[in-house]
Amino acid sequence: MIRITTLVENSPGEHLALHHEHGISFCIETEQGKVLFDTGQSDAFLQNAKQLRIDLDNLNYVVLSHGHYDHSGGFRALSEVASDFELVVGKGFFTEKYAAINGGYEFLGNNFTRDFLVERNIPYSEIDTAVRELMPGVSVLGQFPRNHRDEIINPRFKLKQGEEFVPDDFTDEVLVVVDTSRGLVVLLGCSHPGMRNLLDAAKERFQKPIYAVMGGTHLVEASDDVTRAAYDYLRREGVEVIGVSHCTGDKGMRILGDIRDSYFHNRTGSCLIIP
Image 1 (cartoon, rainbow, N blue to C red):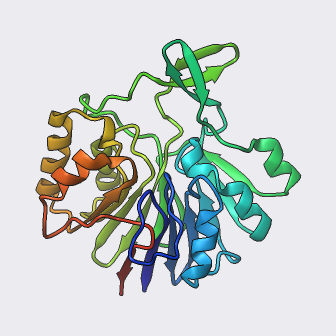
Image 2 (image 1 turned 120 degrees about the vertical axis):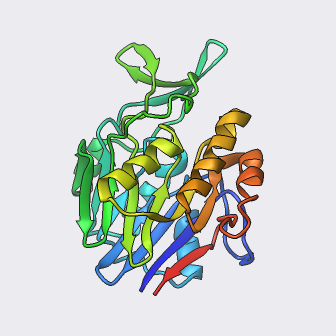
């Protein structure tokens, strides 16, 4: 059995004892092991895991989708309670990330560095490959094509390189694919390189249909045309389960929600179970 639980997300679910926050975190449990994908922005996901009776002490891997605080901010708290896992991030994850606002800059990056990992003896790898299999059926993907030119990254996102601020093209972003009997389950962090670009990569590299898409799509900043193109893409590909939220935005969720037989609002505590 495969179980994918949303440990934290922007919005509350029916389990009102769970904490929600702007961020996302998934726990992936298979017969082969356990992978944590993103950690939200605080220790909320840890508290929620206890409420949901999910043990995070025996993780095999932790994958962080990219170097923004709402996806990596809970990692420090995790390192206090869990060990014996490997951290996997995309190359460039540790470059400082900022938002540019009217001539000023606001830090949006990670609250830890490589030195923190060395001090805590946490093994880690920065991948720059198209696919890395973590365990049978669970893989990390990076290096995404940019085929859909209308999926534009907001120019306010910046990287600090030395004393300069340069556009962030999110080459550090990674996603997780779980290969199941029903097809691919694709877990998205924020989809800064574009949701359709990311899903294209999963389809082409595995040569299998996508059964489910869960996570953030970053349609919150997309035009109506791009949001409608995302809707058309998911319909055309026949994706059976669409559990997106986080940075999808109200408009995006409303439009994708028109795929009524497939869409659900993925919230804190949501769970996808595949026998």
